[in-house]
Image 1 (tube, one colour):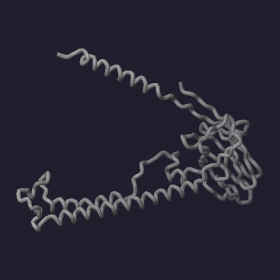
Image 2 (cartoon, helix red, strand yellow; image 1 turned 30 degrees about the horizontal axis):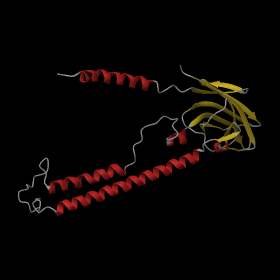
Image 3 (cartoon, helix red, strand yellow; image 1 turned 120 degrees about the horizontal axis):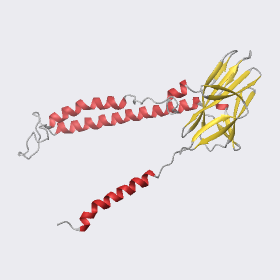
Image 4 (tube, one colour; image 1 turned 45 degrees about the vertical axis):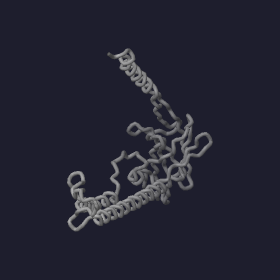
Length: 264
């Protein structure tokens, strides 16, 4: 006969489960959505983006907020040279002025060097791991063969032990042969380049993002333009901040405002 404590246990368990679900559901709140717009600038709209535009001498610069993630703010920047002289555009010179501090733009060349160095380290670690597994497997194979006679039987002094005492009917020599056949596959799998899942274009950990989508150091001749994404580290932005874009002897300053939209 069940006692009262036994019958009440399912009810107690149900109550705890409901409380846990309610508690977990109340732990997270939506993060505010960030938007950035230019302030008091010559603004041109393009596919929903508000581009602030400035011109100084023979140079024209446009910049628009493109989005953000946990690490970076993304801006689309375009520089056009209408003059006769060549102009060097270098994004590592760009910065944001926020609360009296300078937030330097990420340098694509430095980021690419870091990603390539990290890939080189991973490749070396994979090859070292493959060699270690291969050496261990060969040593294990030699040990197994050394304990077997020419017929593949164990040299154990216990005559009651069957040569087919392994699970699945394998003897020592069979196991050694199977192990040797596995080792090359392990080495190939570990030494081959790591298969990287295709990532969105705006992922700064993707090398293709830095080579194909960012604004990189470029010399512009007459009539040429260069455009791409410029990234700034995500820090505590003020409601108003300034983007400063030095290009040769010209310095472009653009005012932006931050807008926060809190989901309900």
